[in-house]
Length: 126
Image 1 (cartoon, rainbow, N blue to C red):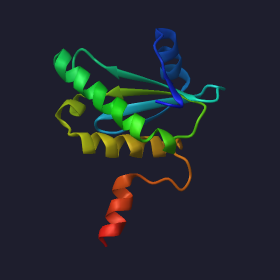
Image 2: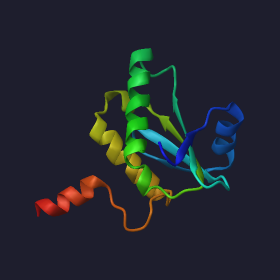
Image 3: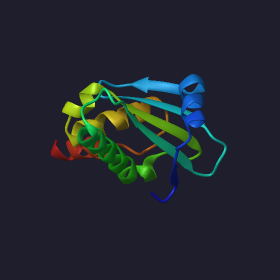
Image 4: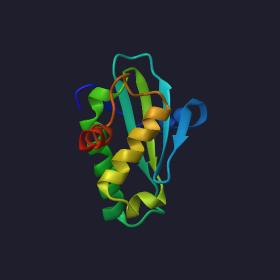
């Protein structure tokens, strides 16, 4: 990802959980907080309670790919943590993408004028 680094340290995750803004969807919870940097830092959490390692890694890979594809639509200068919920293991890629973009929009992390591809596609079909 061009403008994004990863969050790896436990204290960075805990700081976001306690002091960041959050928005929830059935498949995930997103936390964000300004970081005072030029780019974003993003972290992913999938609990051991969700499936086996293969399932958890599949969820993590899907979320990482969604963030990579929509990186240009995100405002810069934020720390973001995405916590997968149990329903994420039962969801397909497109549902995860739709709900992630919706939660990021609720946190005001999307650049103005940038809509998700689903919204653009649905307007073309009319």
